[in-house]
Image 1 (cartoon, rainbow, N blue to C red):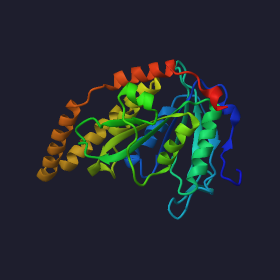
Image 2 (cartoon, rainbow, N blue to C red):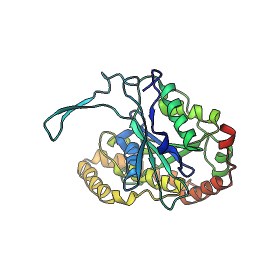
Image 3 (spheres, helix red, strand yellow):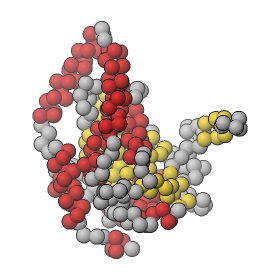
Image 4 (tube, rainbow, N blue to C red):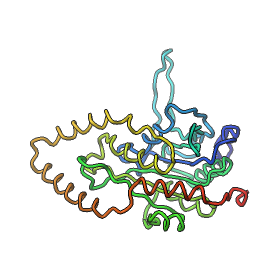
Length: 294
């Protein structure tokens, strides 16, 4: 680990990746119910994975806020588990794109150094696309499929897919700092955000994770295995329904959210399939800019 907080990198893990797409989710303010980081973790399952880079937690965390955990291993030895931010290189057989995945913990300090180290790894691997995913508390009822909103920093891609440009102004996190850096490095940024029912923000909501994975499947052009969550979704739907059973005020509130959800759904024009197919065409047609960045 260098003094400036640069990650420890296994450069060989970044070589030979096929047009990789970097997918980032960070636990914290932008990961309600852990929906986003869980989605990225699932992307790495059942695929060849190597740790391409590791960020030492010391320069980046206030450990009075993000407490390490003490645990006892199978030999009875006490160990400390520190917050981890590991960049994974994932081979996706049969896909046009391999993946770089970061499902970690949002740092408290030195955000510019953190994003710079991450993007240097992405550039070395030849990544032209960064997709950040997050989960926010929303007025989506638990009885409906969570909505995934998408935006991009690339004006041409926004026009082609009918997406919005980022318009948020106000306090931000590492994801906001990351997206601000992307245009300067000729990297396209796409943001996916799923809504989690705000009255379930402290509960698990695998349906939001599945919605993110379904949208990612269209964007990445590779299977995400979101069907693995079907049993969890059914289990938690039963629990959420049971928690509201007999509470007329809560049921009336959910009915109001359903009415608003259905009204907004009718205004949706482009389907995920259409956006995904158009995004893949845009990737194929886009000139290779890696030489321009070297």
